[in-house]
Image (cartoon, rainbow, N blue to C red; front, side, top):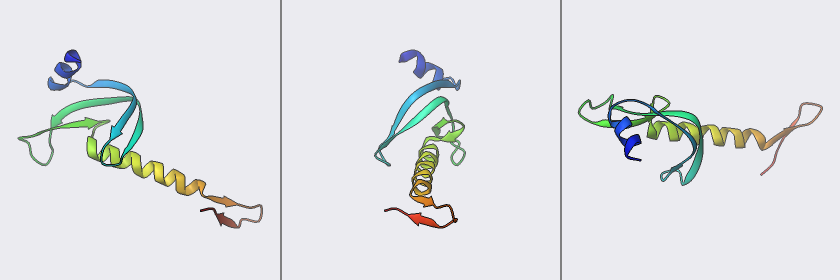
Length: 89
């Protein structure tokens, strides 16, 4: 853990595979060989921010949440042979 922290503080990326938990979304999201890195906050250069795959962690979690719910919405519709869509709730 100390080695990973030192790597992050130095600005070098570390790669992670597994699940990351978002307190905001109350959900775990799968990370596959995701690069994490601490960089200067683009909005306030005096602060540091943790980025996953080049995105600030909050944006990364929001993107993963949006992908999940888009996938769920697509699966809630079934199209019959005539092209008519039925929604299941």
